Image (cartoon, rainbow over all chains, first blue to last red; front, side, top):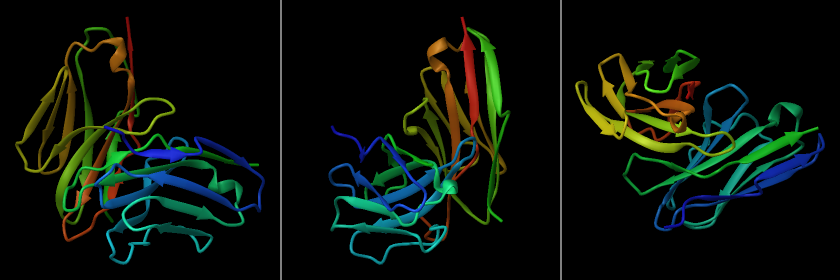
Length: 113
Length: 111
């Protein structure tokens, strides 16, 4: 079946611009996660959505970062007023409710010039 | 502070030369430990989940084991196609859902 998909695969932007990253989870997966992977570092948790519950935003690094999810489908991660330190690969994952294994998408590589 | 440390950072093997990758963790409570494989430019691909000390999982040339302080990913008679970065992650007990990742081990297998 189809896996997690993300778009765009690559995004180059100028410092100060806003960007939106999109994630389509695996069909039937009610849990959705965003992570950030900086060069040479481990993945860092950003935010978690589960059904209609309030999202866990504890990993968002600043108020420039926000995310939304429409029901149990698509999610968008928005970064406002991008900075060079935001350059990273942004990865989305999804899972079934009450199941531990998270399945990852291919990521969006964000480069802030 | 909850922490996951992987060693070595990089490993170069000859084809057929077996070895092990290490993942040590210091966490408040462990619900599960995960191994993923990541190829360049791609997202992590799930390999194994381990829940209890003493548990072992196998898949082709890979075997993952778990103790109370660390996990090992054993690679038996590796092939060049096993070259990738191997990521270890832990899921905490207590209702948390985020994975805490180590920095990974970059494995290169040469013919």
